[in-house]
Image 1 (cartoon, rainbow, N blue to C red):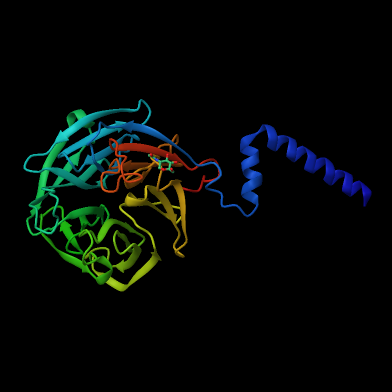
Image 2: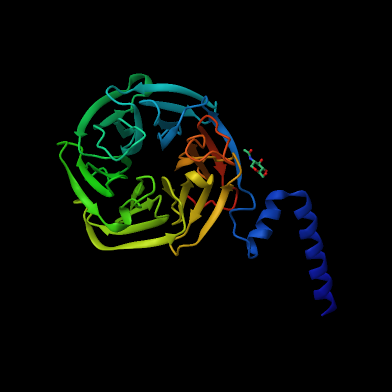
Length: 348
Ligand SMILES: *[C@@H]1O[C@H](CO)[C@@H](O)[C@H](O)[C@H]1NC(C)=O
């Protein structure tokens, strides 16, 4: 019995010693307790910041790990190298004032939404949907027009239905519906519409915003209803085959990423935070704060794609132009790397 106590004492002392000198071990000890494994070692650092006025709206990741980001204030697509922390203009689109959503439709082929974004998003804005092919690199890119959606009001988030379907779903924030666009024919039609997608009367006309497709479901945020939702769909037609479900409430969400850990990582634009939302509706802020610039005006999120950054979330920001930090502070839009730390190997 006494021997057992001595053994235990030595073991505890050893662990305490190691914990003091090895942060990673300390992490595992904490993770074994009741603390959630994510907050203790999460760090955030700026990858690249644009000049004041640049409003970064969305992000996708190339197979080589480079990031593609869209600007809402200019019709420009940029590539950000997260290693060298540099940016280069990939393409400037004609007949538009800005870009919104971007999604990968096949390896290194992306769909980008361009339109005329004005202060009032209540009027249709002559949206065009483009395909950007960077399979041979951004210096040999091919850009082609897939379709125009003239009756779109504020086409915003976009998600692929999968390479086999050769179609995307596009969220209309102002009208509160989802279009299905066939990428081969350019034909489109309204596929989803529900009260959980509508804007709130009297508030900015932004209902459904970010949209993602995973395992037969469409997931989406509604910014001003402050809800995160999902609906089971026919993955070919894009139409609902189940109830529209509210997964979480009290979540002011712009666009978001889905991790393979089953959680959504939601950019909380006006709240200056990045939140983790579980399928059971639990919300946890993992970066930022209302008065902080860390992810001020967060608009979207993407998961790193290489061995080096598969536990990293890249958050893009507007620079807090919609809701200045503390009422006054705005900055250039930026890309922030939020590293989830050593405990999240199952993330991807
Ligand atoms: C906002 O206000 C808080 C509280 O006074 C302060 O700590 C923080 O630095 C402010 N943020 C900015 C960006 O000024």
